[in-house]
Image (cartoon, rainbow, N blue to C red):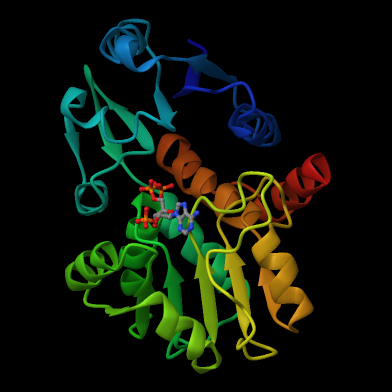
Length: 269
Ligand code: ATR
């Protein structure tokens, strides 16, 4: 029987996941479909039951359902439990299990830049995305992680959970030159505004600036970092690798990530 997969979210029409996974199904000779499904928060339970009954083999979960899906699932793994969020669901018989590939997707993307494992890393933000990345950095062997955030208390909380160091935003701005890698995980840059989550005047030329936002490809943060002489990493790699990890969980096949990064960069460019 033909297998099918989905991504659920609200909104969902701009998702590039259907394009990405259907391309990989084709490239790997798999007879499968990937469908975007618009699910409003009040319909999540019914949508979940429909996916189960109609035989989806797995699905991705995007905003705003990443936490709300958890009580509906048969179970979640340690990664999703630590993040308290699920982005990938895999069928197991008559139920679905949840995991989260966002943080590991970011770290795989970061590894393409060949960073030293003793790099001094500054993570900007303390929301859901920062949470996934800070756990994944630790799993990936990056020990020297500092977290800064507009609301300092949230940076303190996340840092204490992940064995990282919290830092006030003003101090991080002042000491930016101490860091080898600066990762921007906030929603600033998604909007048209030119605001930056942190002033970059003290950044060290040659250090690496990474953003998790991939649309626009060049966020105000990356643009400014490039002007200051930083190397940059946009969010396309994270998006592709989180999808590739999910694809492998669903099919057992490692898809071609390099070509996909190129395709998506062309699509968004
Ligand atoms: P996500 O799951 O996408 O990480 P979130 O949990 O709502 O979303 O977290 C958003 C992050 O962006 C937070 O770190 C937030 O800072 P606060 O904890 O102070 O709210 C940060 N953020 C959002 N808008 C911001 C802005 N205008 N300037 C600086 N940080 C901002």
